[in-house]
Length: 115
Image 1 (tube, rainbow, N blue to C red):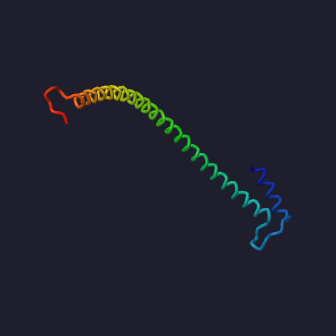
Image 2 (image 1 turned 90 degrees about the horizontal axis):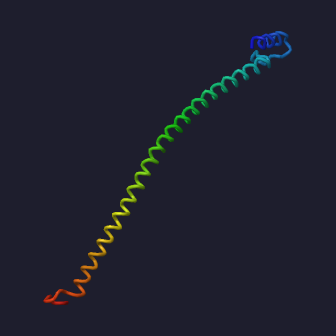
C-alpha cells in the first residue's frame, strides 16, 4: 500500500488536479471517499460476521431443542398408545355395565314392580 500512497503523493504534487474552493484536489476528494468506503465495508463485514456467528449459535441451540422435542414427542406417542389400550378396556367394561343395567331395566327381577 505504501507504493500506492507514493504514486498518489506524486500526482497530487504535480498540480494536475485543480483544487476546489475547500482547498482539496479531486484526487484528495476521491481518496477521502475511497477511505470512507473502505471503513464502511470493514464495519459492514464485522457486523455480518457477528450476525453470522449469532445465526450459527441459534442454529445449534435450535437443533438441540429439536432433539429434546423429538424425544418428548416419542414419549407422548407411547403414552397415547397406552391411553388407547386403556380406553378400549374401559369401553368394553362400560358396554358390559350398560348391558347389565339394560337387562335389569328390560327384565326386572321377579317380585319387583315394573314401571
